[in-house]
Length: 436
Image (cartoon, rainbow, N blue to C red):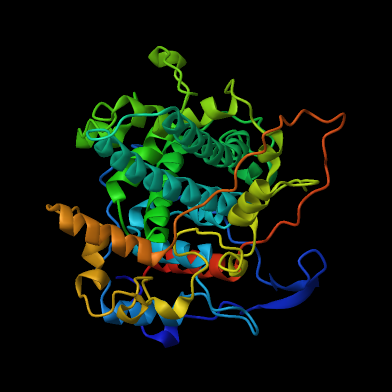
């Protein structure tokens, strides 16, 4: 790697500047005294990256030590030592190929909107995998059992839960698309939306961001079911027609689904249009005809008055402090779990597994591989359940929530991302691009 130089040549994060108190964040902020550097145009290929982007997952001990010393998030006094979304992003950025990294991508990943987007995507994918396993078992049981009206009720609840979680992803994605809030300067037509559209650059940035988010979700979910995650994420963002991952893998996973599985996992907001009129399933969720609690669309941004237990669960999962997730019984992959039970690369340590003596339970390969026998599949499922618990969403209110005379506009307290980590990754990228 290009950052193999001695620690002495690393340089300080806080050189040539001063500290000031920021009343908004109630913390000290570093202000550089150096003149602003001109933004350097990095030559990148016009072609957007597809499924060929490979992240390193075989980081040796020396590189792990280097990561822990230079790039791992340092705890503040009194701060809980738990895995945060930032920790997972750090691993993804450290193992990412240099050719997909850019200052713009690093800045984008350190925005509150993107943080909520990533957490909503982790929650959605975790529940999708959970319900996919449940539906596969239910379809197998149909060989010896008869469907009852209760089956429809349970499966409709699964379907509505998945739709609501996709909606949480869609609302943050919509903010990015229109350049709203803190994503304004990343809009393809500029902050004021007056310049000519940079469509090629925007296409590459979208593909890169999506691929990095897939990696983050995979890491957050314990390095398991990568293909399922990548296929589903690309489907909900691009639709079945433009799912490049499916075109490359040729799994035919949707065609292989039973009718009941398809109804639950895809939802009933799927629109069958001609190619030119195709909208992504995420946008279809926003403009769906089903009954949607309007408060979901402002979750984590606008304060919700008289929230239901379901809304409280979702707002804590998407925008709440990670240290409270375990206390509230909210499962978000490995996020919120004690960092001491994982190694530097966020793989579970042998002592963290309740299966104890079984070597298979702590093997990193067991999380991503498919077993050939049913017994090994059951063993793999047990390992996944031991790593983090299932999502149990509070049920929806039976009453219909009507629009109020006036929508609330009091903003929620926005949790800022780590400026220190953003600067670390920007400095590393500059050294990788200019090693001499």
